[in-house]
Amino acid sequence: MKRRDFLYRTAAATMAAPLIYSQSTRVHAKDAGAKYRACVIGDTQQGGYGHNLHMMWALRDDVEVVGLADPDEAGRAQRAEECDAQRTYADYREMLETEQPDLVSIAPRWTIHHKEYLLACAEVGAHGIIEKPFTVDLAEADAVIDAMQAKNLKWTIAFNFRAAAEVAHAKHLIMEEGLIGELLEVRGRGKEDHRAGGEDLVVLGVHNFDMMCYFLGKPQWCMADITQDGRQVTPEDVREASEPLGPVVGDSIHAIFGFDNAVQGSFASKKHDDEFPGRWGLDFYGSRGIATIRMTTMPQIAFIEEPTWAPGGRNSEWQRLPDRPQVERREPLMVMQYAPIIDDLIKAIEEDRAPKVNLEDGRNATEMIQAVFETPLHGGRVDLPLTDREHPLPRWQ
Image (tube, rainbow, N blue to C red):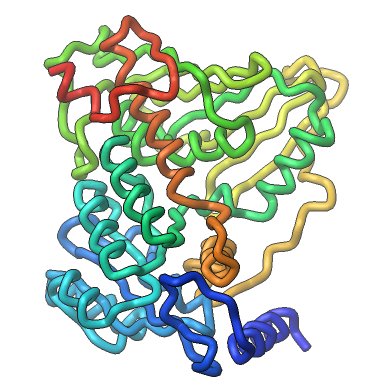
């Protein structure tokens, strides 16, 4: 029997047996073989369907998509066909009230409506997944997490890179097995495309920061230098991002965060002429070498045993991680990288625990973003956690 068939048959057998559910779950043990009812919130004109979140429920045989909402008629029809949604709606609130789903995927990339989407899902007692970035600011993140915790709802966020099995393996080798010796520092860069600087910090930096917290824990402070056209930014430089993600500032950002054991993590994004240089990711510098994670469809991880950190040393050959886990092929392939997140979400519901990737992680990454934007108001440095939860840039203006 193929591994995939074995996993699916095991899942089906589990669904047929009595299960222990949290109060908020509407799939009951008496309904032998019952499927979770999933809905999709999308908006073709306002954030679309980031990374095909509407397709993710197809990774599971025990989930059926009963509804999809999108105010755009053409987009609604197209996406409903792609995910085999049973019914469609122009208004997501009508869908939630009518369908009373167990699960929801919030697909738009834009953050401006994330809070209202999530609070509406909390009202009907639905679990689910949301596209990153999480929210516009920490005040919104706090409100959403409080609402979900009040009803014991399980929510995950689309941090697909950190959820990869090879990243967990890399963390074990680097942080516990001493793959590159004692960890000295971590360096991250954004994608540095047309969004370089403040928008890159929000859209792509969120993955860097989630990964830093996963490896190092939460930071205690942040220092940052933000410039626009080579000069220090002023309140007049604050602008709205090219997509509705809240205010941003700067076309060049260099930020440093302080973690435990005097380890510092940095993030940089600078506008330049060579777009898509492929540096988006993290580099871990240790006393005996370097490990690197590059953010592609699946994270690309390698290491070098070279304490000088320089080419031409005793050993300048990059290697793949030893004993790295094999990636199981899952359909649909376009969302295969999200399988660990979706599988764990279902387990978290059934075991009544927090998902391994959850909204707290989204809030931690949001706090690191907000800390960078907070620094111009405080002479370039702030302590964490932040006491002011509202977005700092409107306050600066």
